[in-house]
Each structure stands twice: as structure tokens, then as C-alpha cells.
Length: 448
Ligand code: PLP
Image (cartoon, rainbow, N blue to C red):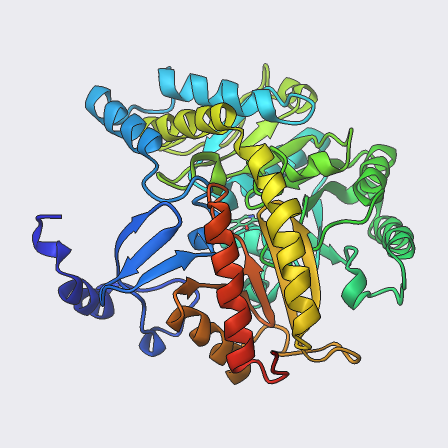
């Protein structure tokens, strides 16, 4: 960049003086300056090259600077940078067609938003208007976005500062065998008891008051807990029986991350009424999210105006990036590649790490979507950092990763392995080896 603001030291200085960062104690930050990024790597201002096992915030599914996406944005910028949502735009029309084509059950209409939180807000608004009911049920251990309603639906500590309004949100326990809320000892037991619990919550809250159940098809930041066989089918059945819409939040798990176009496809035949997406839909190159809508919900708004919209709904630059991303995924078999990465490299590789490191309590995941639970003691499962917090021990492991050239994704006591789906086999193995070395160096439980 031959521009005045390309000087990395000045960028850092200006950031610290003027940029207010998300979710952070401002004065305690020492953010990394990223001077360059390509494929699965980023470079910092000291010239260090880091393998990105985070896909940033789990969005660069096709890696950094993918030439097809960059070229599509460039061409769209040259043709027409922007146009209001009321006008038809070729990139937007094609993006909607491609997204709809891949949704389970063909959710044929798409409302575009700026990201995941507002996609969830709109999905809830649609569900409320469609059903004439108000409440939304969602799980503890979930994240649905940072705006007022989305953060209230969220089931993690990020909600706590904002849950002071009457938003009609109710939380329940989803299945999570490793830290079961139901004293279950098998996946089948966990599934059955979690469904019984949800059925009771519906009865006690009143089915006649509940518009929707919103679920991450595979909870992401909360811990990549794969739902046991039969769980999503059971939730769908409870929704049908009680006149409740099922909203699948696929913001993180969608677009190949879980080795399927959408993670909900792991529960064959389960079709949500509304499906929200963002992030991987265009590798996050230009902000975009949206809601894919069933025919039934669409019909509610066929002859009655939908009361909602956004200035940048279906922004042409973002939609051009969607078209290039999905076409690349189709042409290069990226979804199948993600599934294979999980089966051949991440699954076996992480399980092998767990054999060698006492500090790994559980390994779980699929595709390019994996979590390891770090514990002080395998028998008690005491987490290496308390719920909602980090710890000096977690900090030491993360610092060891970075020092060795790996950018890790961490949440509380977990490290997530969520690299671009385009990562090469060699890079994936290198990243796992670095993770192993970092655990050997810094995990209190030690290792070989
Ligand atoms: N839903 C899920 C499952 C997410 O992981 C996220 C972001 O991490 C969101 C919603 C919110 O998306 P955004 O940050 O684009 O508003």
C-alpha cells in the first residue's frame, strides 16, 4: 500500500489513540497489526508469518485474498459500486439464487442484512409476525450476535450486560454430554433428556406464547457441541407439534465449515423455517448476512408489507463476493474438502494430541470446525479457565502458539481449530504440530 496510512507503526499508534475495540477493556489492549495476509497466513508488523487457525472470526472460509473473490469485487466496483435495495441488481439476484439453491429444503427467498446479528433480529421479527406470538427460546451456551435482541437470545456471558429489557427471550439447555446438565452418560440419554427438558420448557412457558426456537445447528463459539443423533429431528417435531418456527442460525457453522453446505444437513431431512447466515457466505470480504425464508413464511408477507429493511441490504460489492465465493466452492469441491479435512487430518490429529496430552479433556468437531476442552484434571473435568473467563494457564498456551507461528482461536478453556477450508494438508498438519508443541511447553498437565 503506497498510502500514508500504510505505515504499520503509525497504524498502531492511531489505533490506540482513536479506535474503540469490540468486547474489550480498551486500555489493556495490545492488538496485532496485520500488514499482509494471503491464503491461510497473516503477517504482523515485525515480519512474523502466522498460520491462521482462526479464519479470523471464523469467516475467511476461502482464505485471504482469494483471487476470484478479489476480482469479482474489483469488477463490481468498476461496474456499479452501490445501489439502493429497492432496485434490481444482477449480483444481488444471482447471490440470492445461489444461496437458495444450497439451503436444505430450498428456502427460496433471501432477505439480505449487514451481518449475522441483524439476520437473527429479522428472522425473529418474521417469526413473531408470522405466528402472532412473541417469545423466542434459545440455548445456554450459544451466540447469536451483539445487537440488543440478538444478544438477549445469546446464551453466554456477553448477554449479561444487556439483558435488562423485556425481550421475550427464554433460555434452555441444549445437549452437551461432556458437561451434561442432565446427568446423562451416553449421547442417546443426553438426547432424550434434552428433548424432554425442552418439551417441559415449552409447556411451562406456554406454547401459545412462543414464536420460535432459535438454535445454532452446531453451536460455534460456545464450544462446537455436535448435537447427538435425533436431537434436531426431535426439536423440529416439538416445533411442529406446538406451532413454533425453527430458526437455524448457520452464521458460523454454514457454508462448508461443518463439511456440509449447512450444518443442519447432518440431521438428514430436518428443514428449518428460517435459516440465518453471514461470515462464510462470502468469506467475509465485504460485510453481508441474511435470512433464507420458507415458502410458508414468505406467504405471510406476499400481500402485506414486511416491516423492516436496511440501507445496504444486498450491497452489490458484498453480493459479487457471494457469487464468486459460492461458484468457487462449487467448482473446487470445497465442502467435500472440508469434510475430508475433518475425517483425515483434524479428527485423527486432534485425537492423537489428546492421547499425548493429559490436559485435553475432550476433542469434538467435524469438517474444519473443531474444539479441544482444556482441563486441569481429566477425571474431574475442571476447566483450565472458569466459564466466561480466561486464565494465566490459557494465556501461556495461546502465547506459546503465537510465538511458534500459529494464530489460535480461544474461548474460555477451549481452543478451536477453525482454519480456512482451503488450508493445505501440510499446513493443517503443521498447525496441529505447533499446537502440540505449545501444549508441551505451556500446559500445566505437560506432555511428551
Ligand atoms: N450467530 C452466530 C452463530 C455467530 O457465530 C455470530 C458471530 O460470531 C453471529 C450470529 C453474529 O454475527 P455478526 O457478528 O456478523 O453480527
